Length: 114
Image (cartoon, rainbow, N blue to C red; front, side, top):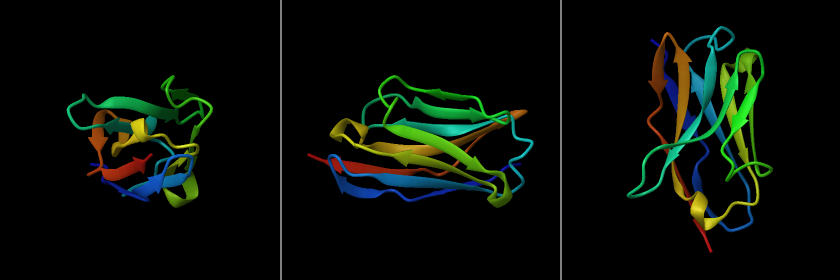
């Protein structure tokens, strides 16, 4: 069972940046897909960005050109660099891993003030 721990959330103003980290309890080298989802109050959880073990990435249209997902296999960590943040990016951000089963972190709050 993969355990995921997110960090890096916080309160920022619009236009600023944050970097989220997701530390996995085991090697992520063999994990098929890792990524980030988010859930805003009153809304469904939605995909933000994913990355396969081969390096292919997928982004939600709303974050393209602003967010970048990356992974450091040596540190068993996945990152989400978020630039030019907007108030509509406010949500709880969840780390996700898919390896036979889907695994989720506990979430980290990101709040963007206008």
